[in-house]
Amino acid sequence: MGTISDLSEAYRDVEHPQFLHHIIPLDFSSVNATLPESHAWTRHHEESGSGSGSGSSIPVIDLMDGNAVRMMGEACEEWGAFQLKKHGVGSRVVEGVEVEAKRLFALPANQKMKALRSAGGASGYGRARISPFFPKYMWHEGFTIIGSPSHHAELIWPNRYASFCDVIENYQKEMKVLAEKLTRMIFEYLGINEEETKWVGSNRVSEAVQLNYYPRCPEPNRAMGLAPHTDTSLLTILHQSQTKEGLQIFKEGVGWVRVQPEPGALVVNAGDLLHIISNARFPCALHRVTVNRLHHRYSVAYFYGPPVDYVVSPLAATCEAARFRGVTVRDYIGIKSKNLEEALSLIST
Ligand SMILES: O=C(O)CCC(=O)C(=O)O
Ligand SMILES: [Fe+2]
Image 1 (cartoon, rainbow, N blue to C red):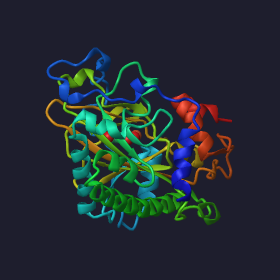
Image 2 (tube, rainbow, N blue to C red):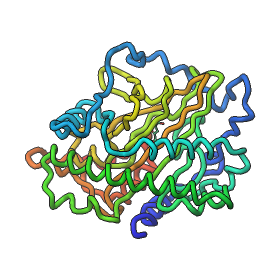
Image 3 (cartoon, protein in one colour):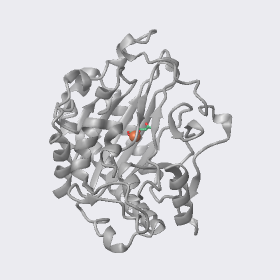
Image 4 (cartoon, rainbow, N blue to C red):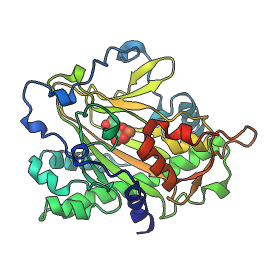
């Protein structure tokens, strides 16, 4: 149980308890033709690079390819992200979670509210954690799982929570194996010695599963699915449902670039912790989500990182000056929760 509760505690320690209005999602089923003002952002879709025809897109990499280490490393350097094929996670496992996510978010609002995230907590149902940093709300609701989902699942489904938990726990297990493999490969690319990777594969890693739901939206051009952010992880593995609009990644000099769902592929992106460990050689992928008029969209993110008491520091900085001071995962979570995008500059040297 070690880390599982540790990660929850790292979030609970954050001195910034959120207000309920930052947690309770809008009841989207009650919205018909107009976007409520609370959710109306200024137009944002016409920015450069957001057209899929621009030719720019994150690389699609086959994990079984003999050059996978180099390709993943180069993708991380250029984009901080890539799509991964032949990753070894069965399609039934992935589709299984998507089915459970659909079932969960289709419940009436009062049912979902039974599993509402608490003001100081990290897991449960609610708005995106980054909500307090933005003037408008997002067209989104989420369900965060750290450790066992059974507590919250039982509140929602007293009689059928076991099957939900089986599916989620199996997904966590498979994602963890994949995340370990990817971490080892990426560290190899960065030339980080094995001594520093001892935590990989331990049962003390920090991990969380995030189910995301973006209902169809009457005015998609004025709404925001998920506002621009980077992930507070080492790496994130994401499954997205096959919808046209959705995830976009920001590339310096290009703008927002769509990540077209590639059948069977998972999106991998570098989080803040990998940015620090790589001494900023890898950008942490800034990403956001747009919504669409016709289809609901679902995604499942798996966040992976070192144990909360592990000191993250630039390991790939053997001959250059370290650009960040060392910081424990727990402290970094605290800094990020209070400062969001300023967090990295607060630990810069
Ligand atoms: O829905 C997506 O495609 C992205 C989700 C995401 O960025 C997150 O959960 O942190
Ligand atoms: Fe994210």
